[in-house]
Figure 1: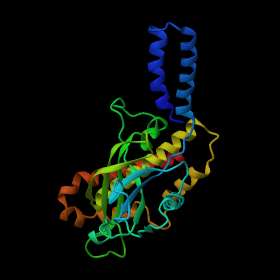
Figure 2 (figure 1 turned 180 degrees about the horizontal axis):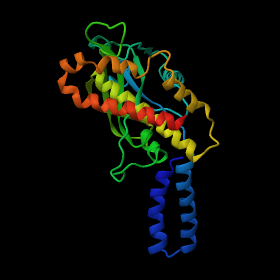
Figure 3 (figure 1 turned 30 degrees about the horizontal axis):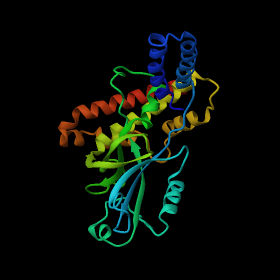
Figure 4 (figure 1 turned 60 degrees about the horizontal axis):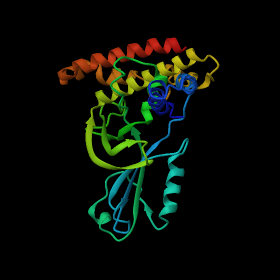
Length: 292
């Protein structure tokens, strides 16, 4: 279902048929196929495979993977547990690590085999030709294809715990993995060539979360506008979680944490970010109404 790649190759072939071979019959057939590929991109919902970071630690592994990290592209609808089971069958004597933190030298220099596996999120890197907003059906391909950067995030608390609002001091420690080549490629896995870590503040995390949620609502609404026959349940569940956030409290928690005079006085440098969060909340109200 990588129709984008087929279209690119088809354009090269069309050039040959039209200007080198003058085979207009083959050209017309090729253009009909390309038209179908474009239609598929817009109308067909494609599965999004997961990506997994796998580290092979210990002197028991072959040198070409020893103490290295690789990013793997899972099969369609493959869960992490199933991927791990498939991985461990190749190394039946390996021990699965229970932490996602980088191992110490004692693990790396041991004579055994230790495998670390966890899900990572591909980071969207749109081609330069998309210099203006385009349909999510077009963008969705690049969310899981032609990707070279992957991230793993974990929450970190700083300061005293606030029992009334856990978002106020919830930082995110994000590790970015950059592979040698874009995935997928000739292989379904490539070695990680560089790793770096960034910290996301509670306010930045709130902005990011709101942006992702808004995009998700907007994309789902657009899908239903394009195809009214789609099942309504996923959209209704998403909207219900926003309109009636029984567990997490919704964006009201952000208001309590960041829209106070105390916070603004202590963090005057966050003024622009607070305004952006307010805009995202207002936008969420608007698109939620559209969804309803």
